[in-house]
Amino acid sequence: MMGRMTLTVVMGISGKPVELLEIDSVLQDEIPVIRRFTGGGTVIVDQGTIFVTFICNKDAVPGLQSYPRPIMSWSSLVYRKVFQGIGNFGLRENDYVLGNLKFGGNAQSIIKDRWVHHTSFLWDYEISNMAYLKLPKRAPEYRQARSHLEFVCRMKDYIPRSNFIDRTIDACRQPFSSEINGARSD
Image (tube, one colour):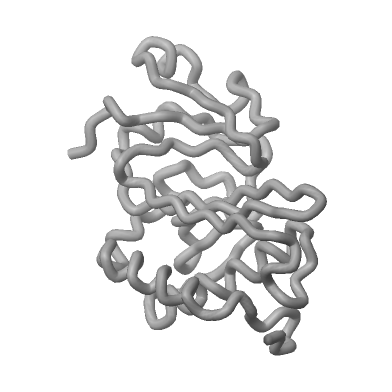
C-alpha cells in the first residue's frame, strides 16, 4: 500500500487550485501542492509515479521544429517503440493511452534555443488519492466526462516496471532522430 507521506499535488503553470483541487480535503490532509514551470494538467505524484524528461537543444532532433505539437508527436514515436506489442498504445490529445485509458500526461516548456518535454507515467496509484482532484472543466474530448478512476489505468497492469525502464533507456539510446511527419530524418 502506498503511503500518503510522499504524496504531492503538482499543478501546471496556469492551473487554478480552486478549479482543480478539492481544497478542503487537500488542506485537511496537509497535502503539499506545488506549481511546475511547464504547462500541462494537475497530477498527484508519489512513489507510484515514473518521470521521464527530455531536455534538448532546439537542434537535438534533426528536422524537429521546437513547437508543442511536433515535440509531442516526436516523443510519441519514442514511446511507440517502448510500448511495441503492449496493449493499444497511442497519443490522444497530448496524453499517452492504452486503448482509451490514460497512463501518461505530458508538459512542455519551450524557449528560444531549448525545450523540455516531461511525462508523468502512472505506474501505480492509490485510488483514494484521486479524491483530491476535481473533474477538470477543460479536459480532453476523449475523456467524455469520465471520472478519474474510469479515465486512467495503471501501467503495472501492462508491463513490468524494470521492463518499461529498460525499454525506455533503449529507445533513448538510439540516435536522436526519428520519423517526423512520415519522413525519415537521420
